Image (cartoon, rainbow, N blue to C red; front, side, top):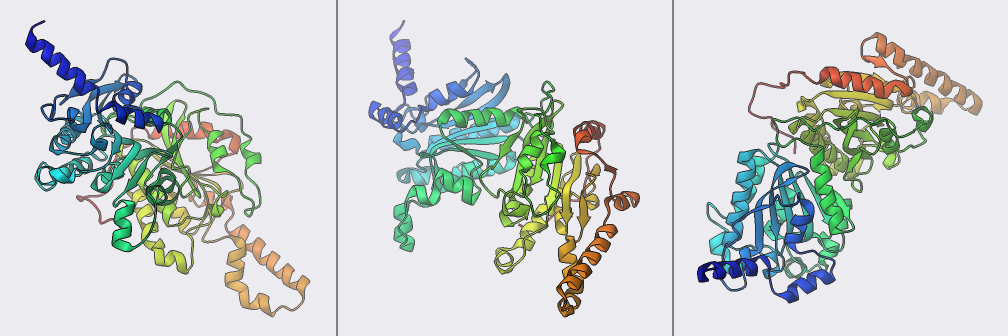
Length: 509
């Protein structure tokens, strides 16, 4: 080997080793893997091809300029990969770092393949701000490219450490974010900065830790115990989606659902809760339900699943939490997921057990009308096959929010005991007859009056009557629901997808 080859080999070895050993040891003590090991565990063996390995290689202590980028395969399918190396100046960004990230996103978008972000970065290097921050190929271009790629290619982020300041927007622009509890965090300003600006004393964990974002802010989607769990989320998430907006979700071998007595699961009394997640598992292929944002806005359950091997997106009200009433956060949760499914050709299954949107001073001040309008907008604009199943009830604007008949679903199906109305019987009787009820002094007489009026209301909204008026397309027994859904989604698979003559709507964000 010539001296030149030997020198190059040594340089490559030094770059691939990352930062100083003490930084590797510090990461290992926190349960953190080396960035290159994360890529190795995530991607198919021998498939990773690196770009920009020698970026800033002439500088001292900046191997690859702190970020590893390239292409690889996951389960035999091509992806673009970016991984911050936190052993190199805490994974901070320099000018070459930014250029490498910009290039790999542009490459993934041009090739029409998913983009994977393995994030562990302290943010921009202030000392290099003129080179990396303001220009046409500065950090802003990363976010511009992410927005451009959004809905065109899947973008998924696994967050292993900090994602600070402007860098926090890389996860924010991804479809989903998996966060490792105890290590991952997202924040626009550090705890020291917050105290200096606002006087508030806090910690990074309390302000922007993984549990905060997965359970309270909704910016995180999956709370993971280990880094391997986060990598598994990335792999599983991509397994439900096509490589880009023009592809079809990958099929899998069909499987029977888990053994669930769907009829017995749903209580007759609307006041008694049941877990919609169990209902989903009794319909879809066993082991296929992949719940998203399980800890946030839990009154709404969302996720991917497979019906007879084919991917569907599930949106269901869960009365185990807040009675299944739609709040500001659950409306946002639904809006984003519906848009995600519509972008990547995933049919939508709505399982309705909804009392409606929450009312009251607090939610009005939070903008419940605006957020509800956002959810209804997303459902209106979705042109993938949509099926609405009224499992127990669909009251008020909740019917609209769950893709009811007015929103061009491919079918509206009801169970024999389902109810569709402006409101429930008790609320309706009280709304119409409150004064008369109050005027009846005899308790037994009052109870009889209420029961009579309630029975009249129930007859008025009888599900068979609604089917006779063509509001409902089918009334299906729980035991037959899965078969009915499989057949209807198969029939709708080739539908023409068009919504409106325009560039885009003005979304009530």
